[in-house]
Length: 294
Image (cartoon, rainbow, N blue to C red; front, side, top):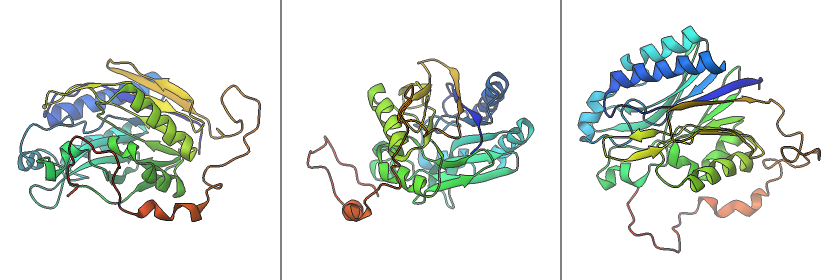
């Protein structure tokens, strides 16, 4: 891993105005590169439309594109022109009408390097709840000259198994583009826990402003170190946050400490103790309503 700067560009999209939002996303990307020197820029979840589409899934399918596709040609061009890496989250057109993935594509100067399809759909976006998204099933980790980057999206953060899988595959930084409506306490706790669990950097870019469903997102994007130090934290406004990432972040047990780090959460696992982790289950506490995954 190199020493480099990562930025999160937190801005309000215009609900369902796909081409306008692509232009806006690229303007914020250029600004982040210019103002912070960022080599990696992360954008919010579903940046081309906003999270809740407010239209039938067939109409959403028609509005968005495959990855890569015509709508992301300017994204690839911007990454090449700015000589940076860009996490571009968008709904992705599937192989037939009605199949839409909630995806995040990683672009670099050399083109599109990988596509992650959200594996843990929030209940309201599931087709079984009258929603619009079809889940993916594969973790995605991409090696770049900057770092080995794992891709996740929003609700994925609640599932430590996915982050552990990406860390085991070599991720040094895991990005989390989001459109999160729950409390700041949950957002802050989960981002720090996933970073510390796996000794990885987390760059979590949250949406700000309304979507077509009338939901308002609170921002507070954050960048967290592998020892759970908040390196950068946004507010509830449109803004850019950035942090320089140290390629040797585990030399001391905590920030500000001179005590040496003597443990490694990946190496120190007791794998024999986790045999039940793949067993289907549900909470013993009953939620208000259960929505099937499929």
